[in-house]
Length: 196
Length: 196
DNA sequence: TCACCATACGGAGCATTGCTCCGCTTTGCA
DNA sequence: TGCAAAGCGGAGCAATGCTCCGTATGGTGA
View 1 (cartoon, rainbow over the protein chains, first blue to last red):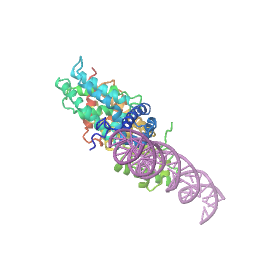
View 2 (cartoon, rainbow over the protein chains, first blue to last red):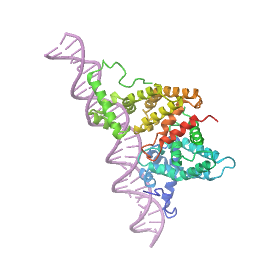
View 3 (cartoon, chains in turn orange, brown, red, purple):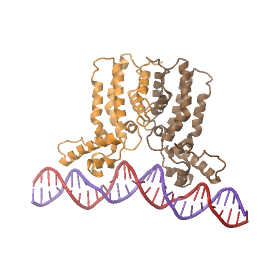
View 4 (cartoon, rainbow over the protein chains, first blue to last red):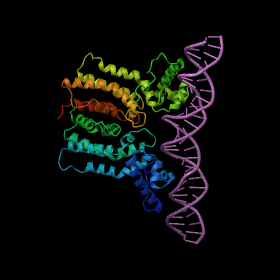
């Protein structure tokens, strides 16, 4: 399995200057294109936006998923950090609730991310993996804490719950009338309800 | 908006015999291909399976979504009928629960259907529409009955709930470790819980 | 029975898009 | 400054949705 496909790997120093410059340029271009055209924008478009060739894009980021991961790495980190920061006020369950909605916000505002996350398209496994790797531990901890406080079920796996929340975010954007928040709350209520 | 894009429209009598034969052949071929290669199988493959040309496929079914609708029309009808058949035993809430799981079964066993249903890919709106048109009324009725019996919330829209259940089914197949049923039960529990 | 033409068919072909390949350019070291 | 290793660019390949139009065919009127 290719760990460290992403450029950050290997010392940032020893690489040629144009490599560093191009990587930065690419990430910025990708971010811009993702905002205006969604995660599924053609790679050609990103290359054009960056003023670079296709070959360069693919040498830096072997699949578009890697590009996506690169662009959202910071936000993923913030999301993970947010879960670890103890809430000033509120029960563990409240913290969980808050974080889940923050997670949903993240997915909903990146057009196509939720879809890509669960896509079976080749190359997108790494995106899924990255999310699981970064966020599953923190979600697991939030769930455990809430369960320990007796406020929510203990028999729900973080993995299932994470996928479920991610799934609920699919199709926002396509169906403006779909109220995701409402459904996420419903799922959270189901989690809170004592197991029958 | 193109209502009745599907061949069934217009009297079944007045059409040439080869047209009727080909339509049937196509539906059978598509069904076979969908089973072995999923909903997203290339149209070429369906044409080959049917022993017909691409042009013929597209004349009969303007988009692949129409083909999908054609193939699953019967099962969609059965699903709608199942909701109307009063359960021998059980509360309205139990009926709702049963039907929702049946709906999920349907989606889960058709590889790629849940994904397609909420895809923003051009041409797939008709698939979404068909599902909404056929199933929303019956789900609405199930929800209302259950709510009237005081067993579940009345403030959840059938549309949101249907999309949510469909969404939860996304990614089964891609992630064998994901327990959909569990998450659907969680959502149902959230629905059952009295609004706080 | 036959001829005719509206209807339907087939599949080459166009456009898009992910990804590769390789000849050319650039960087940084000696 | 010269040179090799590293990197770049973009033409090109393969897959795939969908169209277009020359050709074949069913069914009807004579």
